[in-house]
Length: 181
Image 1 (cartoon, one colour):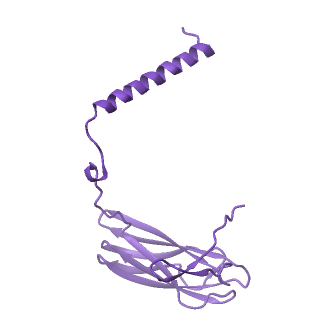
Image 2 (cartoon, rainbow, N blue to C red):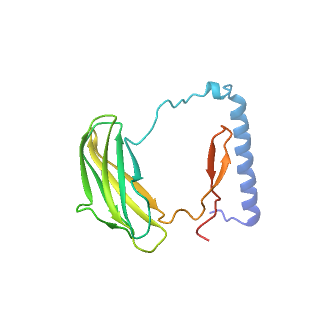
Image 3 (tube, one colour):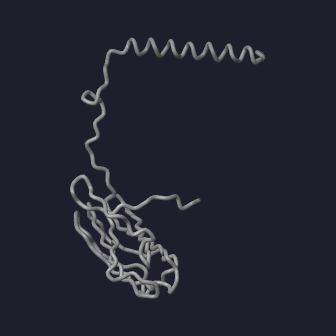
């Protein structure tokens, strides 16, 4: 049994790192292939995207104590059967519809569907969060996508500053700050 003392441990570490550096130096010297962006062996030419795309759009003004109608647009890149849109959590807002899940039926490849949800916003509060679940049967089984909508009844605290984009377009710039501190 070998007992390691600080002196032996340092010697073992020095020897190991020397062997690794010599080994890697010899390996790189033997390598004759120069890898550049032009000669890269791996090229990814696919577009990896979820088959369901979702967009939530308010249909009326967002104010405390008021009704808010939200249109949930669903687009699919593959054919789906039995597509449903479900409001899973409302975090303070109250669902006004009789059902939380609505059927879109069958969506063919590259088609869209939409569903309207109505919620009542509380009289007080500056932020509410809605969570949706979109689900359908695809060629390889069930496909599910989540979507969220952040409701700021009285508008954002920072209205933004208009800034000229290099393209010439005017965009709104918002200051960033940590909210967890």
